[in-house]
Length: 101
Image 1 (cartoon, one colour):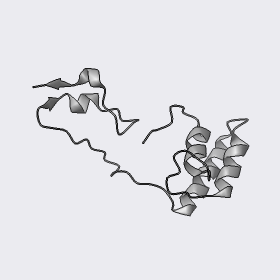
Image 2 (cartoon, one colour):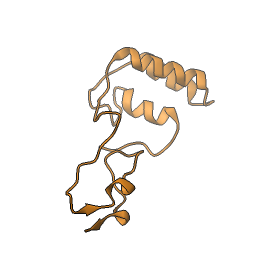
Image 3 (cartoon, rainbow, N blue to C red):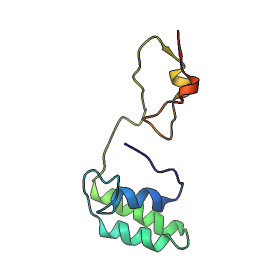
Image 4 (spheres, rainbow, N blue to C red):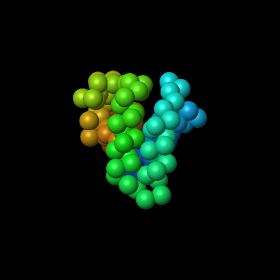
């Protein structure tokens, strides 16, 4: 699983909600979301992107990977897990921060 590396709502919305989006694992299609994202793309309009979010919520179609409290599973001998956890990419750890001990 991967996550977008850009802050624009279009980046996240397009790949998650468009029928051919790369992270649209559930194959949901929500034309109102796509339309609102396309309206917001040229200008960065907060209103258009907010509308896209509202329409996405209405679908009830998204992939819950984990509880919002977040967690990591590791062997007890692996140290530095909490400090190395990349919150914006929930499936990643910064390897340089890990040690055996």
